[in-house]
Image (cartoon, rainbow, N blue to C red; front, side):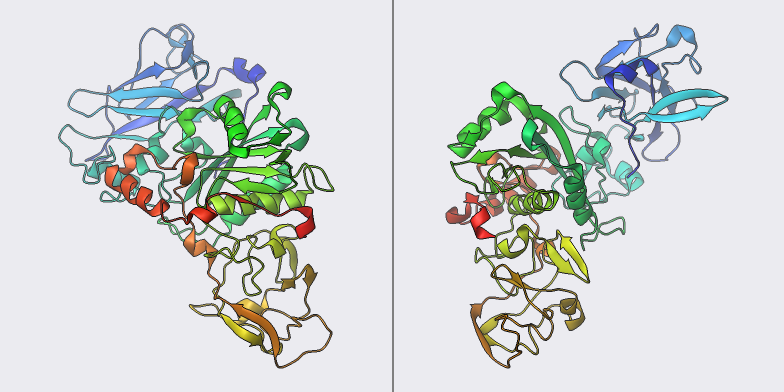
Amino acid sequence: MKKLLLLTASAAILNGCIYGTVQDANTGSAVYQAKVSVINGNCSGNGCGFPEGTDTSGMYVFDAYGDRNGSANTKFITPSSGQEAVTFRVSKPGYQSRTFYHKPDYQKITYSGKTYYVSDAPVIYLCPLGSLDSDGDSICNAAETRYGTNPYDSDTDDDRLSDAAEIFGYNGVDIRYYGADPLRKTVLVEADYYQAFKPDQAALDQVIQAFADAPVTNPDGSTGITLAIDLDSQIAAADVDSNLSPVWTDFDVIKNQYFPSRRSKLFHYALFADRHSGGTSSGISRGIPAHDFVVSLGGWPTPGGTMQQQAGTLMHEFGHNLGLRHGGNENTNRKLNYLSIMSYDYQMPGLRVDGATGVVDYSRLKVNAISGNISEFSAMSGYGGTTESDLADYQVRRNGSWLSGTASANLDVNNNGTLQSSVFVGNINASQNDWDNISFGGGGTGGTIGDPHLGASSMMLYSLTSQMATPEFMVEPCMTPEDM
């Protein structure tokens, strides 16, 4: 993902320009004299009274410097008050018009001794009137071929964000700004926080990197998931509720004030708060799967949590939003054969993998069931592609203690210093690879991720699937300091 140069409000006087190109979806050639209009946004400059037009190369520029279109046609475009992106419309007779949302991400360039700030809008492939759109996502088949997306699937990368939303934005929100790509899975989170409990950026980065390293394949040939966490608003002191109780009633008072409804089909919503329900639970998800979650480490020995505890809890609670339970596909907690941040054994200290400690990750392994006894010499075994070599990378934690050996061999499960051929550990079901079972659609009472460009049939299918969550798992507070 390209780095964004985020300008402060005082830097707005730098007068950045916005540019882009318009091409014919069928031929790929430049569209000359297409009209690019600002439908919603602020314009300052001498040429604000009329739209821009494309030149013979298909390019248009909202030129704030006067270098391209002359000083009589300067335009500096910014989002309108209360909005986060500018709304543009591209039109030309004989073509379907296209609306897109653009949040300027100004990049600094130097040209001929001058410094400019420029922001590139997405390439627009205009579809001739009558063009076929097989998947009904508002992008004609010919344009989908140009973008590399599937003309018969409105969500090429299966992340519950439509191809149209990832290219053009949706409902006034430009998710391309946050790294959304129709050929790579993307998950978006808005995180708001109380002043005393603002998360450490290093904790957020650790979780972002965990998703980037996920063993998940994408249509563009890459692996991993783009997780964008928009650390957005500090909750005003007057709005801070030190004990969210009833948790979702009080949560909604804050959410309704700070989380824009225009984001509701695109972003999960997280609140870094003090406590909830009168206790010291580290957090709670609004359901499994779900749209909303709380990180509430105010009552922990380090109020707000250490960096490691913040990262582990964020990954854990968000995992519930993504459909994961404390045992992966079941709610049995602290399963010996389940090596995941979703287990209380690993939520706070993280995993130990291949010599690294404090690893925040969901399970990457498929581990066989254990029937009563286990041989400490041979430890656990994998299935479905999980090998002994994979298991050998992991150390195991049980009852608050790290065990000698690995998940593959010489595992001292009763921690008595002696390896035994048979130790009773109880009946434990097989454990899943969590990354293979992520649910991208949110769900529960907090809302559902998925914009209307996915199509009615796709939305209905997810709605039916999300109802399969057993009611007893719909609201689940997580660990307390006593659970460590």
